[in-house]
Image (cartoon, rainbow, N blue to C red; front, side, top):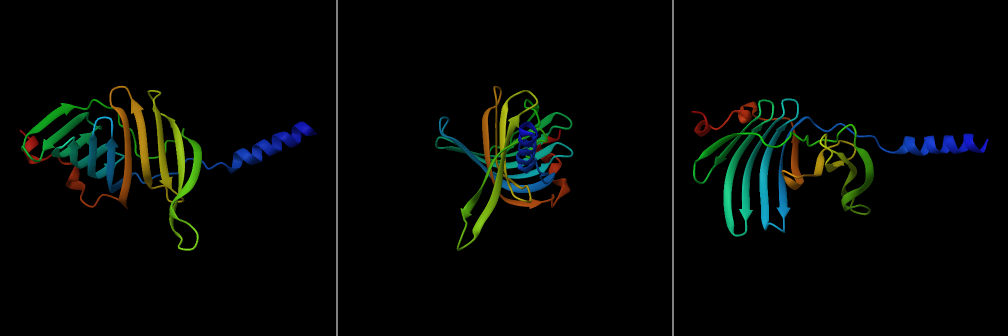
Length: 191
């Protein structure tokens, strides 16, 4: 009888843990990334298409006191990256060196906690979030925090030996892609 009660209790408790939610598969937003050790900061506008594995970023990158501006198109679906320097007007076309990591909660992720951003209580100016963690297909750690219940990305991070640590803070997220032509390479990159 004790074992039956213990099994029922464990099942009831495990059943209360949130399961990975479904994030939007296409969205536009802004994000910020910082690396204090490298004196690096980036602010970017991103158009994201998980179905076709395409990402476009308009970036403002600062390394120390040097700033540069890029229009970067990652076409993981065909393995090509277009990196157009908006200041020098030069374009580099290369093979993509990093694996496509979706900005969504992977199905294998485990619930790691929940909380809110902002002030809960009297003013009720907050957003509930859930944190999930897991490993990339290559076995590297990743985490994502998303709004609850709608599953919009708030923070995303992962580590790989080739890229290093990548941690992004998302804001101004909107569902869908306003202009599908955003995934066409800049004309300066087409020869």
